[in-house]
Length: 194
Image (cartoon, rainbow, N blue to C red; front, side, top):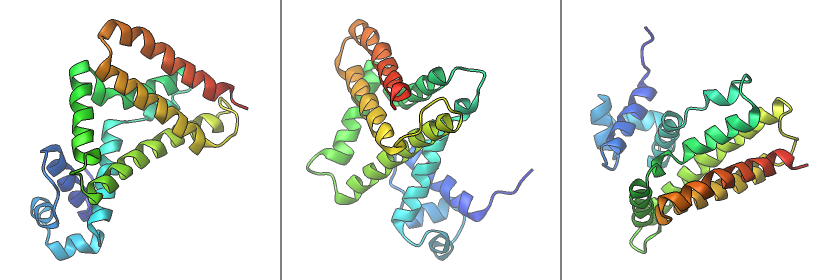
């Protein structure tokens, strides 16, 4: 059994605090990780570096992407499945409304701090890098033509954002009819791009 390193303990502690709905301060993270504040600062010199590492860890947990490498499944289906995983926080109409309300109140509302907005940009960046990595894998397989993975990723993220808003706004029957065809159309556009 591998021993967990200090850096990983710190990130795990910060992730637990975020999952509990609290803000991860240096003091609370250090206490939960069982390390001193100076040790935490050794690994994460800034609050931003700690938050970035923690958000990255939470994204990895929330969006495992091992299936993208499963070549026994057609490439288009793998990408559709992975994009669908991005929609998990918006699973039901009620969850979608709650998630979007939380996003608005935390990051967009006039009361949101610049630090909160920066945190949102980290979340968006993590999601985009994840989609870019999926596209790079498919490109390396020859399933997707070489191209600008960043541009394609931004396109797919815009579609996913729109679908997540639809989950919050549209009644279920209308949403279900629209959602599958929209995601498939977006994936087809990426696969057919030259």
